[in-house]
Length: 166
Image 1: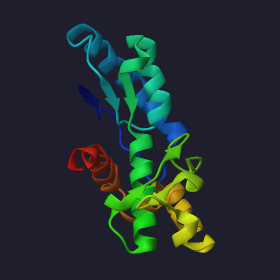
Image 2: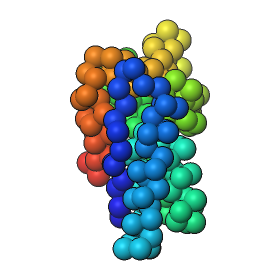
Image 3: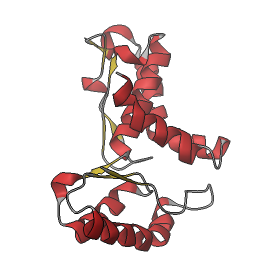
Image 4: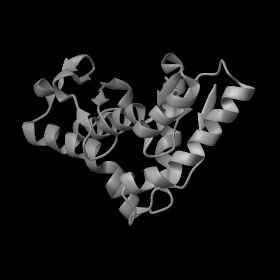
Protein backbone atom coordinates (compact mmCIF):
# COMPACT_ATOMS: atom_id res chain seq x y z
CA UNK A 1 0.00 0.00 0.00
CA UNK A 2 1.24 3.46 -0.88
CA UNK A 3 -0.27 6.52 0.81
CA UNK A 4 0.31 9.60 -1.34
CA UNK A 5 0.66 12.73 0.78
CA UNK A 6 3.05 14.64 -1.49
CA UNK A 7 2.06 18.10 -2.58
CA UNK A 8 1.33 21.56 -1.32
CA UNK A 9 -1.18 21.76 1.54
CA UNK A 10 -4.31 23.84 1.14
CA UNK A 11 -4.14 27.28 2.69
CA UNK A 12 -7.10 29.60 3.35
CA UNK A 13 -6.27 31.85 0.38
CA UNK A 14 -6.07 28.94 -2.11
CA UNK A 15 -9.16 27.24 -3.54
CA UNK A 16 -9.21 23.50 -4.18
CA UNK A 17 -9.22 24.20 -7.91
CA UNK A 18 -6.13 26.42 -7.65
CA UNK A 19 -4.47 23.73 -5.58
CA UNK A 20 -5.10 21.23 -8.37
CA UNK A 21 -2.81 23.12 -10.73
CA UNK A 22 -0.08 23.07 -8.07
CA UNK A 23 -0.39 19.40 -7.08
CA UNK A 24 -1.27 17.73 -10.40
CA UNK A 25 2.34 17.42 -11.58
CA UNK A 26 3.54 16.23 -8.18
CA UNK A 27 0.99 13.42 -8.01
CA UNK A 28 1.73 12.48 -11.63
CA UNK A 29 5.44 12.09 -10.77
CA UNK A 30 4.62 10.05 -7.66
CA UNK A 31 2.27 7.82 -9.68
CA UNK A 32 5.00 7.26 -12.28
CA UNK A 33 7.38 6.21 -9.48
CA UNK A 34 4.72 3.86 -8.06
CA UNK A 35 4.29 2.38 -11.53
CA UNK A 36 8.03 1.63 -11.70
CA UNK A 37 8.69 0.53 -8.11
CA UNK A 38 5.37 -0.84 -6.76
CA UNK A 39 3.13 -1.55 -9.75
CA UNK A 40 0.73 -3.80 -7.80
CA UNK A 41 0.31 -1.47 -4.81
CA UNK A 42 -3.00 -0.20 -3.53
CA UNK A 43 -2.71 3.59 -3.72
CA UNK A 44 -4.43 5.90 -1.24
CA UNK A 45 -4.52 9.52 -2.36
CA UNK A 46 -4.51 12.03 0.52
CA UNK A 47 -3.19 15.03 -1.42
CA UNK A 48 -5.80 17.71 -2.10
CA UNK A 49 -7.90 18.09 -4.12
CA UNK A 50 -8.37 14.36 -3.69
CA UNK A 51 -10.89 13.45 -6.38
CA UNK A 52 -9.18 15.02 -9.41
CA UNK A 53 -5.82 13.76 -8.18
CA UNK A 54 -7.23 10.23 -7.99
CA UNK A 55 -8.04 10.65 -11.68
CA UNK A 56 -4.52 11.89 -12.31
CA UNK A 57 -3.10 8.78 -10.63
CA UNK A 58 -5.55 6.63 -12.60
CA UNK A 59 -4.32 8.15 -15.88
CA UNK A 60 -0.81 7.00 -15.02
CA UNK A 61 -1.48 3.70 -13.23
CA UNK A 62 -4.51 2.46 -15.20
CA UNK A 63 -5.84 0.48 -12.20
CA UNK A 64 -9.11 1.93 -10.87
CA UNK A 65 -9.63 -0.99 -8.49
CA UNK A 66 -6.43 -0.09 -6.61
CA UNK A 67 -6.82 3.71 -6.24
CA UNK A 68 -8.61 5.01 -3.16
CA UNK A 69 -9.29 8.64 -2.29
CA UNK A 70 -9.21 9.73 1.33
CA UNK A 71 -12.00 12.29 1.12
CA UNK A 72 -14.90 9.87 1.62
CA UNK A 73 -13.33 8.45 4.77
CA UNK A 74 -12.42 11.90 6.08
CA UNK A 75 -15.82 13.47 5.43
CA UNK A 76 -17.64 10.39 6.76
CA UNK A 77 -15.54 10.47 9.95
CA UNK A 78 -16.30 14.20 10.30
CA UNK A 79 -20.04 13.50 9.84
CA UNK A 80 -19.95 10.67 12.39
CA UNK A 81 -18.17 12.93 14.87
CA UNK A 82 -20.76 15.68 14.41
CA UNK A 83 -23.62 13.22 14.91
CA UNK A 84 -21.95 11.81 18.03
CA UNK A 85 -21.53 15.34 19.41
CA UNK A 86 -25.21 16.12 18.77
CA UNK A 87 -26.34 12.85 20.35
CA UNK A 88 -23.85 12.81 23.21
CA UNK A 89 -22.57 9.34 22.33
CA UNK A 90 -19.31 7.76 21.17
CA UNK A 91 -18.45 7.80 17.48
CA UNK A 92 -18.28 4.00 17.74
CA UNK A 93 -22.09 4.01 17.89
CA UNK A 94 -22.41 5.97 14.66
CA UNK A 95 -22.73 4.69 11.11
CA UNK A 96 -22.55 7.57 8.65
CA UNK A 97 -21.51 8.11 5.06
CA UNK A 98 -20.69 11.09 2.87
CA UNK A 99 -20.65 10.89 -0.92
CA UNK A 100 -19.37 13.24 -3.59
CA UNK A 101 -16.49 15.62 -3.76
CA UNK A 102 -14.66 16.55 -0.57
CA UNK A 103 -15.65 19.83 1.02
CA UNK A 104 -18.55 22.18 0.49
CA UNK A 105 -20.18 20.09 -2.24
CA UNK A 106 -20.04 16.82 -0.26
CA UNK A 107 -23.35 15.00 0.27
CA UNK A 108 -23.83 13.62 3.81
CA UNK A 109 -26.45 10.87 3.63
CA UNK A 110 -28.43 11.68 6.78
CA UNK A 111 -31.32 9.40 5.78
CA UNK A 112 -29.04 6.34 6.06
CA UNK A 113 -27.01 7.39 9.11
CA UNK A 114 -27.68 5.58 12.36
CA UNK A 115 -26.93 5.80 16.08
CA UNK A 116 -26.66 2.34 17.58
CA UNK A 117 -28.51 0.99 14.55
CA UNK A 118 -31.42 3.42 14.92
CA UNK A 119 -32.15 6.12 12.30
CA UNK A 120 -31.09 9.66 13.19
CA UNK A 121 -34.64 10.99 12.96
CA UNK A 122 -35.62 8.78 15.94
CA UNK A 123 -32.96 10.33 18.18
CA UNK A 124 -32.11 13.81 16.87
CA UNK A 125 -34.14 16.87 15.92
CA UNK A 126 -34.13 18.26 12.39
CA UNK A 127 -31.94 21.12 13.66
CA UNK A 128 -29.39 18.72 15.16
CA UNK A 129 -29.26 16.69 11.96
CA UNK A 130 -28.81 19.85 9.88
CA UNK A 131 -25.99 20.97 12.19
CA UNK A 132 -24.23 17.62 11.68
CA UNK A 133 -24.70 17.87 7.89
CA UNK A 134 -23.28 21.41 7.88
CA UNK A 135 -20.28 20.26 9.93
CA UNK A 136 -19.61 17.41 7.49
CA UNK A 137 -19.77 19.72 4.47
CA UNK A 138 -18.05 22.83 5.81
CA UNK A 139 -15.88 21.43 8.61
CA UNK A 140 -12.73 21.35 6.50
CA UNK A 141 -13.07 25.03 5.58
CA UNK A 142 -13.70 25.91 9.22
CA UNK A 143 -10.72 23.84 10.39
CA UNK A 144 -8.53 25.50 7.78
CA UNK A 145 -9.66 28.91 8.99
CA UNK A 146 -8.99 28.06 12.66
CA UNK A 147 -5.79 26.04 12.21
CA UNK A 148 -4.32 27.08 8.84
CA UNK A 149 -1.46 24.56 8.84
CA UNK A 150 -2.71 21.95 11.29
CA UNK A 151 -5.97 20.84 9.69
CA UNK A 152 -4.04 19.60 6.67
CA UNK A 153 -2.34 16.99 8.82
CA UNK A 154 -4.51 16.08 11.81
CA UNK A 155 -7.86 15.38 10.17
CA UNK A 156 -6.53 13.22 7.31
CA UNK A 157 -4.34 11.25 9.72
CA UNK A 158 -7.29 10.64 12.03
CA UNK A 159 -9.46 9.51 9.10
CA UNK A 160 -6.78 7.07 7.96
CA UNK A 161 -6.38 5.38 11.35
CA UNK A 162 -10.05 5.40 12.43
CA UNK A 163 -10.90 2.09 10.67
CA UNK A 164 -7.87 0.49 12.29
CA UNK A 165 -9.00 1.45 15.79
CA UNK A 166 -12.40 -0.23 15.52
